[in-house]
Amino acid sequence: MPNNCKGDQHLVDALYNGHETAITEIYYCYGKKLLGIAYSHLQDKAKAEKIVLNILTELWDKRAILKINSLTDYLDTAVKHAVLQAIHRQKHAEKITEELLQTPKEALNTCCQY
Image (cartoon, rainbow, N blue to C red; front, side):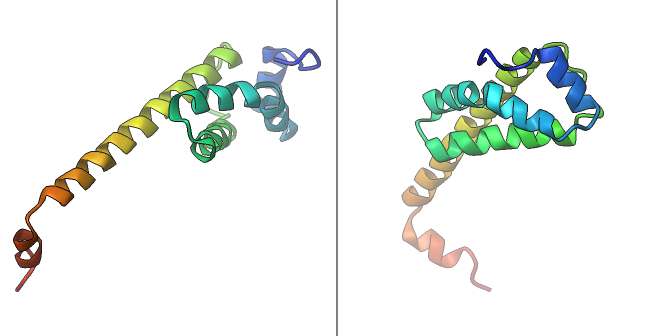
């Protein structure tokens, strides 16, 4: 976290109180780290950026019901979970693609004829 960032508790309090600047500060303080974690696993900048944006959006949207003891821990866990989901989705998509590529053409042509 950069030196001029306010502490976790200040940011969490601002978030709970609905201060929109809290998300900007959280991004400024943690965004580079979160992007680094996501990118190191996905090797895809666009996907890493999307994950971070989704985490911050969800953090804002669910601020009234979240119980955050440590913002650092929350964000680290959220990005790791999102990366695992992205990897799982990618592997699932690859599996389906492989299965479709191995499906005989006759089966594809006859499956939906009425």
